[in-house]
Image 1 (cartoon, rainbow, N blue to C red):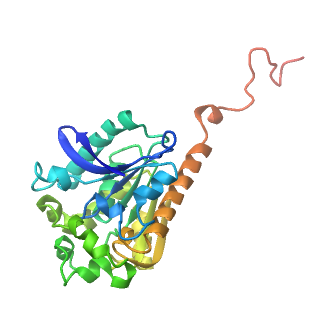
Image 2: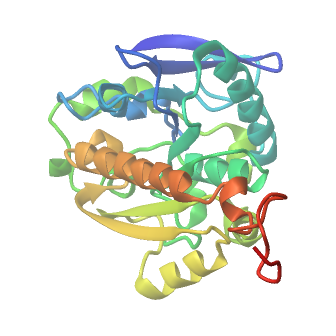
Image 3: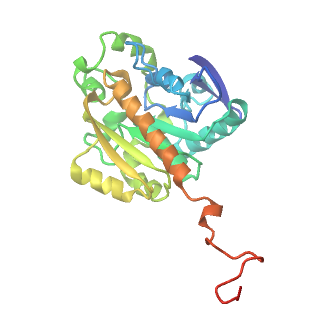
Length: 301
């Protein structure tokens, strides 16, 4: 794993990059963190095996964990952050520049958490060519006052962000401290708007989607009725919902991280298999069409 910088139409985005040791990547996994976090969310260092970057590269994928616009290196040039629409344009520009330099194999697959899931859906709705989306910690109806979603984690909101502390390795909170910070102002302003924004975005998503909700997810409603409504709004060809036991909202930093990451990459494998099995233009042509040298049914031989 190494740090890198991507150019996004003049905006410099910091990122963590992990590439397979042998040969070109099978695909690229782009990881998008949630509000008030950074790319290191996907590279948990509290215990071996928790990192998506390490696991993905070992399985033959390039993993690119971005600091979303307004975080990391871009915070200085974007002190207020960007709106969801602006972030979509910025990240698309960054990915357009990444591919020619590194190769993308079969294409780009997105693993996203919380607010990063909003960006993932916005990218798909904007027509970005994506293999699939695996989103955790994002619903479409708040379970708490959405104003608290934008709050910097403290004792009053820690349980909402983390759930029971025993779900995380002992060093998690010390090592994660540099990753945690306030949401940029532009992003924070849009938090309350999500229930109204989601239906329009969902109606334009044509990418397979998998949604994961932790057992101790407390920011979002995830009862059966609410999830049926949410999945019904998505125009995706495939929508699946998974529930992850013994996990809190910050899944990728907890003991359940490896389980979640393996399931996310398994979904990527399913999406790749589905792509391979789709009929090509040649496959869709009418079979057994006579050539000029072949007689038709009403021709004598």
